[in-house]
Length: 368
Image (cartoon, rainbow, N blue to C red; front, top):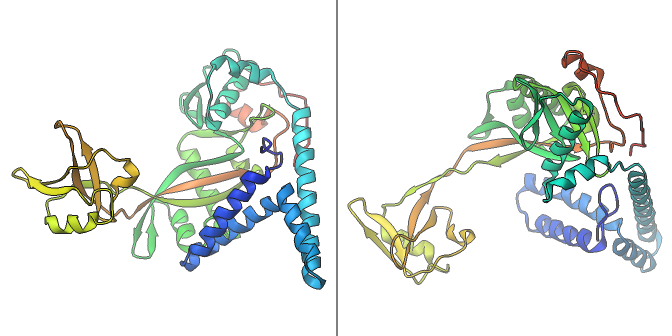
């Protein structure tokens, strides 16, 4: 069983993720995508090596080899042992500094909450605890409204959210922001931005937050229940940035083309034995004789999607043509650099709040 962050991973889950990453890397034939998958594989390999099973593997390989190869495995083993030792120390430090006051209050909800819900809930409790008259409220999974037009972005240790949109025209991405467009068109790997691209990304994201009414960031450690609220321009000091493009669905429309094309697409699928017919004045194409199927199986090709209708006693599938989208959501990915072991409010945000004061927690813990 894996320990909660920042504790170590268990052998089972780490090995499973390593095998998945290895297969994806080996099966990939696209050079640019393979570069990204290689970095993911390297990360998952290091995590696996830090587990007891991974370290036993390194010991066996060291015993079965000589010379340079033996030294290489011993070096990897030494590094893995130090990583796990630090993870255990960090976890123990986290538990020692844990503050249960906020957790006791969140338990009153009586239900399981997502990591974003936990972060937003703890931030709101922190504000209410120190500013009893505050009108702050949660308005979305990652946003708290302090007052009209003044927002806080609430961040757990790992965060991702859609903050932009890009349209692909040929090999070029077009966006409303010239800065973002330069990042997307000049970066080979959005998960590992160059120094110049990273600076541009931070500039773009800070401007988007400012334009949207955000005046601060709330960084949350859900394990220790600590909350730190600070100016948005300090975000790069506490979180690592990366981006990813998520293709938007293009939607579907009713298909009225020839039946033979559909029949060929159904060969080898669960719909292959169904009867394809066209009905009505608009020549609506349907598939009869097939019971309801999971949605994952209804996307039968790059061209067609089958939508279930229960309008008749037996029901039927309507054949719909897919539309290929050239629009992407620009997803901002953040990962905390240093684990938070203290709570408080920065002077900059306190000033923005027109002199309202929060007495910061005086407890200070170590950072990893």
